[in-house]
Amino acid sequence: MVIDYLLNFMSIKVNKELCLGCGACVSLCPDVFKMNDAGKSEVIDEENIACARNAAESCPVQAISV
Image (cartoon, rainbow, N blue to C red; front, side):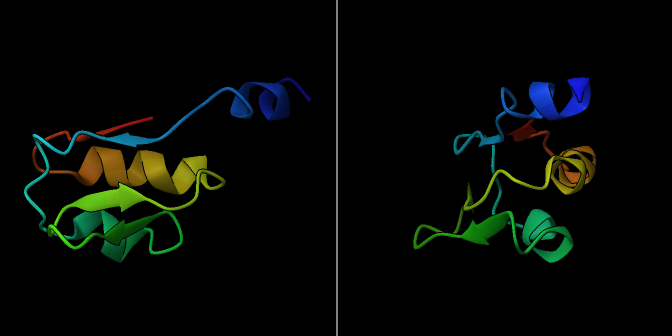
């Protein structure tokens, strides 16, 4: 129950200044991230925190924060 409570306060963010547009996060978590018209990643759903963390760890420029 504590985990569910904490997840309600977590957010996923992509720093557009750092994002290279490599698409690694989209490949790992297509339900969480998508590429926008500018070729940068953006968050489309904040439900899967575990997947987003994995994407953040895989981001070559650490542009994702969870």
